[in-house]
Every structure is written in C-alpha cells, then in structure tokens.
Amino acid sequence: MKRSKFIVIVLALLVSFSLLSQEQTFQFNNGKTSDKIRFQLINNLIVIPIAINGVTLSFILDSGVTKPILFEHISSLEVLNSETKETFFLKGLGDGYVVEAIKSTQNKIEIGKAVKYQQTIYAIFDGSMDYTPKLGIPIHGIIGYDVFKDFVVEINYRSKYIKLLNPDTYKEKSCRNCEKIALSFYNLKPYITAQIRIEGKDIPVKMLLDTGASDALWLFEDASQQIVSTDNYFDDFLGYGLSGALYGKRSKVENLTIGNFVLNESLVAFPIGESIETLKKYKDRNGTIGAEILKRFHVTFNYQDSYMVIKKNANFKKPFSYNKSGIDIEHNGIRLVKNYYYTLDNGRLLYGKNTDVTKHISNKSPYDDYRLKTVPAFEIVKIRPNSPAQLAGLQLGDFILEVNGTDVKRYSLQELIHLFKGPDGKRIRIRIERDGKLFKYEFNLNNLLN
Image (cartoon, rainbow, N blue to C red; front, top):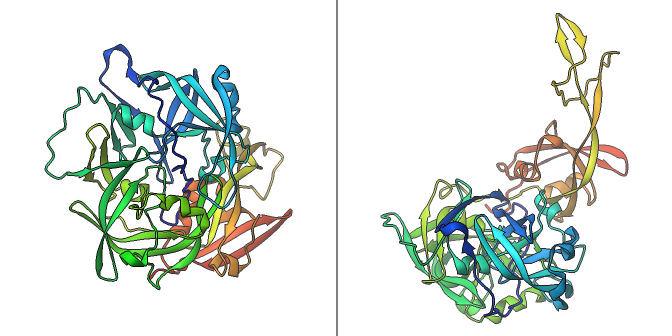
C-alpha cells in the first residue's frame, strides 16, 4: 500500500511448494478461448469469485503465491476433498511461529468458465488467520501461480476485470503506448529488472511482482548496492505475514522506472527484523513491486513466453498517499443502531415502509418507529507511537463511531481509512466508544514525509 494500512497480507508466502506434474491444467468449457471476470478492488487487492468443489468463495489473486490457500476459519476442511488430506507446517513472513496446514489434492476448482479437476489446495489450520477484518469483506483464500501459468492474464484495474486467455490461441495486440517487460522466475514467482533513484543515484533492482501486496514498493536495505533509507522516514507497522506482524521504515524514493515509465515520489517500505530474512534467500532480489504501483497500469501477464505488457492508465499520475493519522483499523464484529421509518402526509406523521432515516431523531413522537440494524464495528488495532491519534488520546481497542460528524456506518472499511489520507493539517474530529463510555478527540493529519 501506501500507508493505506498496508495489508501486505503477505499473500506472498515464502514457502516453495513443489509443482505436481501430474496435475491437470485449467480448461475452458464449451470450446471458449477467453473469459472476462469482474473483481472487487479492496485496498489495491483483486478479489475474485472462485468455486471449490461446488462452493463459491472469495479469493485474492496473488502473483506471489504458488498454490491456492484456504483459511480454516471458513470451515475449509469441509470444502476440500476429505480423502486426500495430510497435515504439515508452514513458516511464513512475520514475527510469529510456524502454522499448521492441511494439504488436499484432487479438488475441483472453477474460475469463471474455466475448470480444473485435480487441484492441490492448502488450508491453514489456524482460526486466527482471518483477513476478513483487515479488508472489511469476507476473504476465504488466495490463489496465484495456477492461474497465471495456465492463461495469459489481462488485468484492467480501472474497469475492475481480469481476462483469462488461452495461451495457445493468444495473439499479442499492437500497442504504441505499451511497454513489453521481460519476466524471470524464481520459485515460480515473477521478477523484473527496474530502476530506483535514491538521493540522485540511479540503482538497478531485481523486483518481485506481487499483485497480492497492497503497498507500492518494498526494498531491502543493502549498503553495498546503495539501497538505503534516507533520513526522511518514520518507523511503522507494515502489515501482516503468514506468521505475524511486520514492521519497518516508511519513506520515499525519488522515482521508480519500469521500462520507459517513470513514477515520481513513490512511497517505499524498508522491512526490518529477522522475520524477513527468508525473503533474501534469493540473493538477487532487492524488493517487491506491489499493487499500489501495478494498479497504475493495464497489465497483461504472459508466463508462457516470459513477459508482461504494461500501459499506463488514469491512475498513473495520482499522487502517492498514506494514512497520516497513525492508527490502523479493522472490522471487528457488529454494533446495533436504530433506523427510523416514517413518512409525512399533509404535515401528519405516518408510519412508512420504504423510508429509511438513518440519523437519530432527538425529539421523539408517539408516531416514531424504528428497527434495530446491525452495522460494522471498526476497532483501532494498531497505533503508532507519537502519532497525531495517539497524542490526542486514542487507544488500542477503541471503537470508532463518528468521523467529522458522520456516523461510520455510512462507510466501508476502506472508505473510512481513506478519510485519514487527507492533506497535511486536515482537522479530524472523532467520536469513539471505550469500555461502554463515549469520548471525543480531535487531531490534525501530519505528513511525516515532506
């Protein structure tokens, strides 16, 4: 992300699963050669519908994973082929420990009009691995390499669809404003060579392309290659990996160059700690290009011929922004609110069935009617030391009720987070619930990366 609450989710698992040569490939039904699938773009992540053994679920499309992964909290063990299960353990990105997982083979999986009958799927056997609160919508799993290897995959971030094309019949279109970029692969994951500029120095870098990382850039500090953070940075929570929380420095690079495209003032994160050492096992890797960069292009991945084609879209020149409040918010449970129903007929208050007035009515009359309604509860789960929100008095576990006078039930999680990405100095008035009591706080957004 940008600071948008970096839901790395690290959908880029660091475990290299062996590819089963016996597995079938995806095939289109009824002789089709392509299919278009609409997706939701949540915090820069592509969420698509996928059916596993006839059950439709929501998956993130992630070029950084090698095998589909289900999260056990949705009773995935009941979805998978029960005759082919075996248990093992995964160690992933983060500061935690290994997690238990289930491997299941010979599962039927459908993506749009494409189907595969012998898919290997991994279920994380840990109820705490639930990314739904972090994105605000149900997320059941992640999928990557199995899709990209069997199709030419076209991603239209602006119109929010992917197109799956049969590589045997695919013909590359002529495009004057496109760039064709060579792909290389390590552990079945795609890499490109790009260039960054730090303090006036142009540095070539080998970067993983990760559609499942919502940030812009990650770089691994390496003084020998002059890849180091400037003094213009702040320490921050970066997101979650498979095994826990991730921390590092947030900063900017002067620019990032991919082919002939130059993106100025890109946000960058420099992860720190022993938890990311496994990332560096590929010695030539310098970092990751995430979806905050990729969404600025129309992207076509062609794994079969080892290249991608990019064309800038209307997002290209949008400035990079981040959450300047210092708090990270998740959707944690629900709260009850009153919805009032009424209509006016010649000045007389009547009951109504279709009018939903969601604001509280302070002067209640005998004719008022309301229904209790459940809405998302948004909880502060991380708070940066010395941030505007912490200095104002906000605390971990606070539930946000209003921002600048508007009830947060009117917002999705991502819309709420977006309110904290405003211009430097913007005043934020916030009302919260803490231990059953109501409090109000005010603070100004503070840009730490001038």
